[in-house]
Length: 154
Image (cartoon, rainbow, N blue to C red; front, top):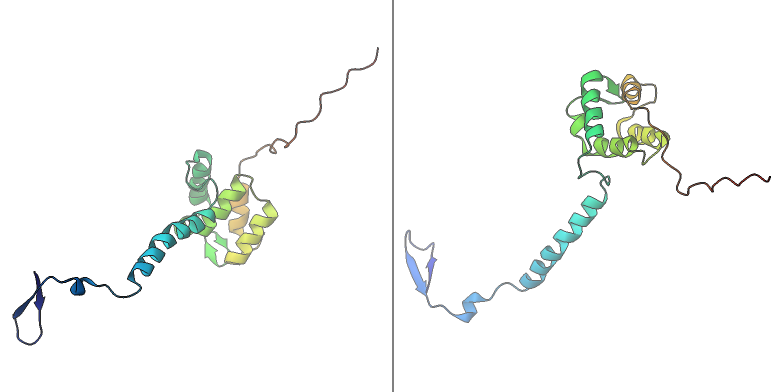
């Protein structure tokens, strides 16, 4: 038995029998439910696919770099924004900086990203500061090792 509250009289209750006709849901309900259940995983893949590959694993050197950036470059400007806790929580800034820090993009591409998003110029104090804090790293190893040296003829 279902109880239906009506607006005809305050606190009045009308009892309705449990009937299959009363359990009919709006047309398209199953389709909408199916769309929602299929859309959520697809959206998750799209969102996570746009993140840096290292976005979900710990990266102690990168975290140390961000701490230095906050301590040594705080309040210096990068175009329209300054380096502060808000910028260091900005997903776009963290993504492009992580990619650059981990040698997945060039300095030219990184500076272009900062210019496009924040109006930064390469000579701005904040950009000079963040570039100056990068650790000196060796170039990544070549994809194909060089051939072994040939023996000299005797």
